[in-house]
Image (cartoon, rainbow, N blue to C red; front, side, top):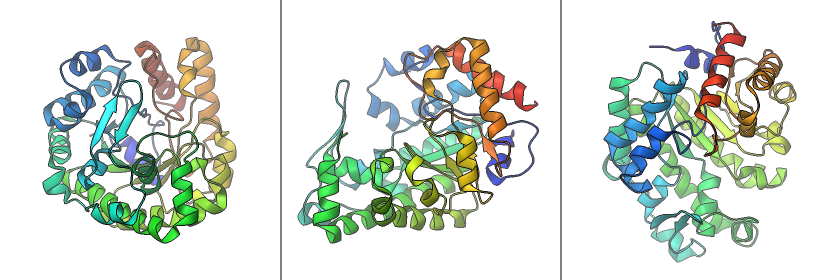
Length: 340
């Protein structure tokens, strides 16, 4: 087992900087498209053999140092009782947005071993086949709440913020139920074999710092505190994190993911030596020439040297139009320039 990724997460000495890519299994790969053409997206997520197959593809093709489970952050929401659909034009759509007491009370906290066993079976299959560590994941409580309240994606999150400000008790009750769900879900993933877990807080960066501290951070801290008892690294990624980095470092995570809008050297100064960092190449930098891409990689590697540990990644997910050759060149550059 190549454990360089796990060592970097723990801040241990490594022979080179490990690299994996958010959304490394996906539409930019023909191999993925071939599988996806056979089934709809949700069916792919819920069919362990197929989900395992697409999880493995980038490990073999790119040579990354970790695999991330192929699934979707909204899977546990469906298990809580909301109907989930994916539209090619509109993205995820959730039935009956949660905006009143009746709908919050109607939500259930699923038992992962019963309601989400297809995810756990995918993990069990992968652990038998992988030669690199497997990362499990979930959406963080606040990000899941936004989808549940808005009914999908949003530009201004008006309904979420109105509930936060007008009905804080209701919002808290919703967040507590989601937090309990996430803790159980990720704990089950770890028990099934996930060797690290990542919390995706895609939309927490749209909060003002004081609102992040009140309405998002307490639930993240509670989640991470429970997960750390399992002894595996916990990664916390907030997209658009620049304004709240000083608060994010209080989350308790072993690794803080940094998006590309932040200079990673400045992020390391703010975070300090308590945790490792992950990131943070702009996904669009994969459209640069190979020489210029290597320059970007070297810049990030140098700036992250003072961190407790560094896992190279993009600042967000791989874009669908990304050339596979560019992703492969990125992984090669990270390995070569960091000393493999």
